[in-house]
Amino acid sequence: MIFSDVIQLLDQYPSLGLTRGRFQPEELAILVVKGTIPIFYTNMAYKIPVEIWVSLSYPTSPPRAHGTVDYQNTTTIKLHHPYVDARSGGFINVPHMLDWHSERTLVVLVTNMCECFSQDPPVRAGPGLPPLPSSPSHQPQSQPQPPHVQERQRQEEERQQKA
Image (cartoon, rainbow, N blue to C red; front, side):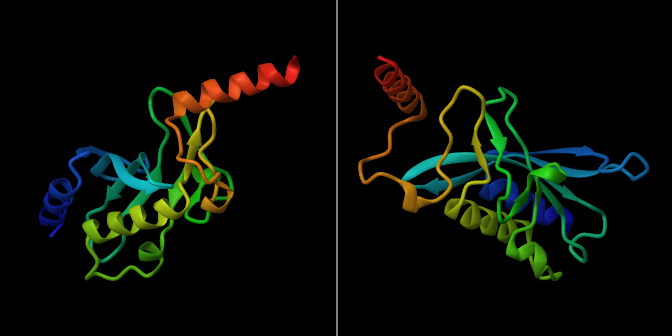
């Protein structure tokens, strides 16, 4: 069952990869699905970095999932997010995790993560980059700009305010 679900997940979400690791030092090595999942927020595509730890008791028990930050340190996990706990290392607790049963699959779980995170992204831009907005209602009505353009606009506005 684990093998079948992981293969389906990797086929459906090619930005994810497979490795192994130990969640706790005393535990046996388990499968870790690692990479990014796609979301669409305010008509823009983003990639949210995640790790999904699949134990040998899967699918009876749910996998453990964590939001991660990218290796270039351009994102951080938002504090007080409804589905990701920054204080616990990014532990993800979307509705499908809370209502887990053995008929659920990794594909269904990741799809639920994508849906939830598209409503409110769990990460924001890291130091030196403009933050992703926390909710669509705070967006201006104009078309959103790429992050590097937003940064230049923010810097220009700061220069104008100082002048």
